Length: 256
Ligand code: GLU
Image (cartoon, rainbow, N blue to C red; front, side, top):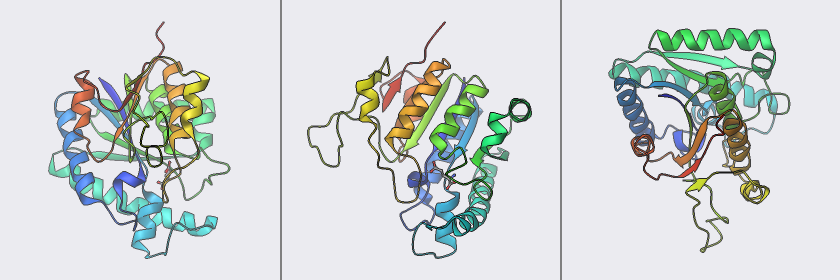
């Protein structure tokens, strides 16, 4: 299977911005194993700004654009260094692709991006994609990696998009506030009622939230790609998902 996995900042880093070693080690191990089993994988990874904040010892996520972009420049290095080191232990080669909105909106540029991705897959490398946060801003850019994950999944005609997050699926209410909120296992149709469950809140360091995840689900399922939201702290769930067992919330892609 061809699978796009998006992992959020809240999974990769602690609230300090420092690497969550336990989560990243587990993720790298599972992805390496899935690659060994013959699956084609693409990783869309956030964490550049969060890790830059940690490395530069900034007090929190910067509010101004130059500091945010400086943090991303530092954090992206740290992120790729970490992936390169950890995937190399399992004999896998990572490739970094940083894109801006124009790269995926302009037909010609998107074509080059897709060609590069397909060639990397043929070469058995593991593409690791992020927005080029050093030059794009949230206002003018793709904005969040849930959307980027869906754009990539559509571009490579993936079988599945998995969003690994600090929330383990879509709930009927806010599970932090509402004890009666229950997880929805399967969404066949993104009705207005389902889309209304998006709410607003994301994490302190990342950009996304449930709203961006549901928009990603809309984009992916319209393109015929199934999507899952699952707990990023437990990447072994990927095995369950591939075996068709329940894990997180499964959004069924449109067929035909
Ligand atoms: N591109 C951002 C980063 O690497 C993350 C965007 C997001 O959280 O969706 O920090």
